[in-house]
Length: 217
Image 1 (cartoon, rainbow, N blue to C red):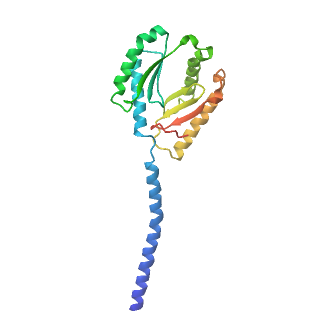
Image 2: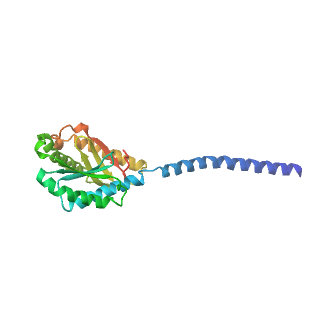
Image 3: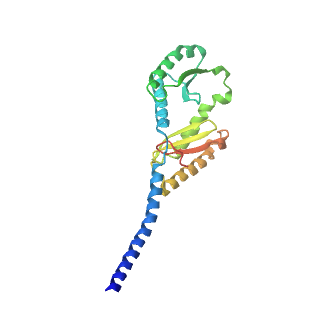
């Protein structure tokens, strides 16, 4: 009887120990998975700043053309207007007022609104050709990537970067291969005959972003 009790107790101890060992790797996997899910893609403030900047640009475009809106590290919201002096002086006050009214209740409320003029008379022939070159570059890339329904927008900065905005939410093995395929195709487009006239084509850095604005390539 005593021998039978000891055998049963031994079996129970081995069973409990086995369950304990089996549970340990599961705990580690869960921890890693949770950590990956909680990794921030972009801060809330960064997303709100970009949203506000877009609102300012859209509102100004309802009345004006020929300008760009950007933020600087000096906490400035800069509106750069391509215009002659007379036109610039006639619009700068209103443009500043529109921008201030939008940012006053946003995350950019402490930013100073600066309206600057880009003097067209001192622009070189190279600079004059930039809009045409960028337009050709962007439209050619968009045409080459038209079969990818995840692509939402493409932005280009002259001889610096090509940023492709996508609707991707997660990055697993399949979507990562998709992203690499897009990047490879952009490289092929850049070196195609259609863009032979674009200067310094190798100076462009290709960035592919997910739906939160995080670089994923």
